[in-house]
Image (cartoon, rainbow, N blue to C red; front, side):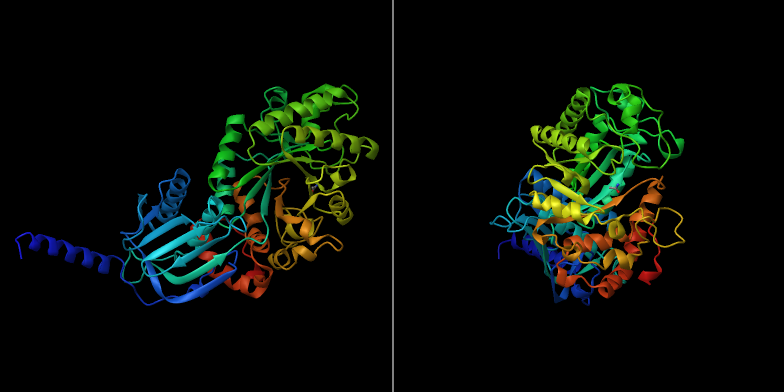
Length: 517
Ligand code: ACM
């Protein structure tokens, strides 16, 4: 052999050795036993391991969206293990220990569907052509596969069992709502919420931006809304508001996790903060005082005044301009002092304004009294007849039954935070209901999904938010994402118990429910 052969064969030997030892397989764990929430449609376990280790790479085609997803996965792996997986952009996956994010050739039959194939050398997360959201949901599942601890004998090896996961959502809309009006929450708090809900494949975050106690979004054409209306909150604290830059930052952060922000301006009731800011919005022409209590149903925009519609138009124009998502929520609930004959034409004009700005109107179930545009979304919270009437008018329904999904409801009579006007909602009650059968007479095909609202009369800190949200949101996330055949309380409980250390690692201040023991 020529003299060159020695260095070459030594190189190949080194390569073989590094492959052998860098990602050496160890006794297998079982993919079927890994606690995943929400439960995937199908998990087929194999009998070996993929080992996440120092030589693991993340490989994607040369595409800016895929690169961003790869960076998100890279960061997630680092947070879970400390490993710095190298990115390989535009390189086909040939090396040992690679994770490939890729699109298939075909468009997805169901958006967000994805497959994860794990063999000894490669993890492939595959979604339909162009369906980046499907890859993001697959990444969230993959994060749940990374064990809490490295291998007993190698502290830079994390074993992931081999097999295949086939998954797709039950509903296209899986939401959470955060009331930032009764108490204000910072941009950082909202980002923390976004990060936590992303793990459970929640894809909409509805922000309740205006209510009696506070107006929380800068509207440049009506600046006193935030100067005055944003200056306090329940209990008389300092309140606060998002500048348009803040809001755009939240929207972009959510988008990077494939979560859509749905902004809500509640009207014509729940408007004391706006009425206190601008006297012309009141029928009396006189502004009320700011309000820091927790009553509802006492305020209304003056629906007979033209200036009110100029106000609504300006607010919707500015809001639509900074909201890439398709929905704008107009509230419409509990307008107790607005006569129905005033309420109905008001909602119809507001509907026209929302449509003019190329958005789809969403509102609490009371809006179905009006002649709403077909395709609007009625958010069922309390009145079954309103949801059914909405469907008769061509609307879709988002399910937020207060007695099952309101996250501000107390777990039981000993819960210090929260209210209980709709129910006490322990985790078993949050889980054990069938969305498609909840409202008798409601066409199941009209249901777009489930949303869990957190009203903030009693909730003042991010710790409070986490305590009321977790673990109930995990139950709702499973009802919204997982196939009905996979809804099983005993199995959910088992997976949750195994999953608890992950919540601890994320330092989530979750409620320790006796129902989950
Ligand atoms: C609501 O809880 N008032 C929608």
